[in-house]
Image 1 (cartoon, helix red, strand yellow):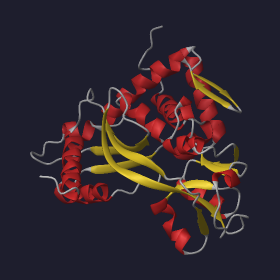
Image 2 (tube, rainbow, N blue to C red):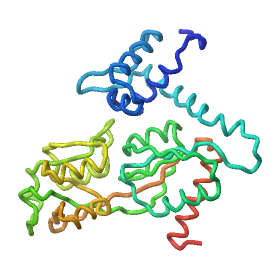
Image 3 (cartoon, rainbow, N blue to C red):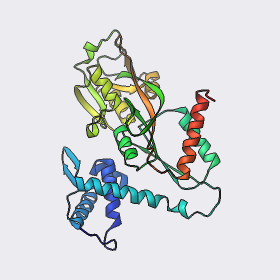
Image 4 (cartoon, rainbow, N blue to C red):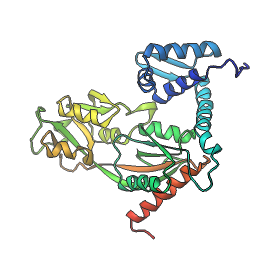
Length: 309
């Protein structure tokens, strides 16, 4: 099949790219700030123009076809190139410009990362920074496909073929809200929790890849009855507070609600939960100057934080 670039609608390609990134027509519509029927219609027009099925969609199923995966890879290269046009055309010597795209899991907290962002802005104020909140599986896919230069995500172990730099071990705890029967109850064991309803991140088990927090839940025998999900940590915390179920949350992120008496930490004896935060990059991906500069600054701040030479 030969395509004519003069008749190909680039807006349809962008809509398709966002749909695959979000793994949902509804979330794509929210990101594009248009209606879901408009997103569905755009996808249908693109499939008709290419005479290929790109996405299998049903109420409980979202699957990108082989043709869709190939098109997504091409779109990623196109839009990455477009985002660098300003930098390529810049005639200002020694001035770092362009857009730095960073992928990060929801509510990531890592002091050297914040310090590196401050230093980047002080040294290179012309750089535009775009931080996208994604699940760890989404981040790994994007880095593997050379769609984004770097990601901060939680992994049970390093990913083969990618540079995975361990940053820190993040502690997690099991929490419930004030209306939950286990609130303020001491001496709970894992047996008390096995039949409890659970609130989870909707990015668990996405694409067949377990998020570390789900692995922790499975390892402890929790999470069989899921009564609430969200892709955003703040909404998971909200549902736990509302008593919909218990949840495994990062201690740092839950501390404010814990101090306010809105959450209760359930501490079964012998259960210690944690997950590893990694900086993930792709050694095969050519980096732009803004990306090289930020990674250099980030590694600088990491070494200073660890008191390394």
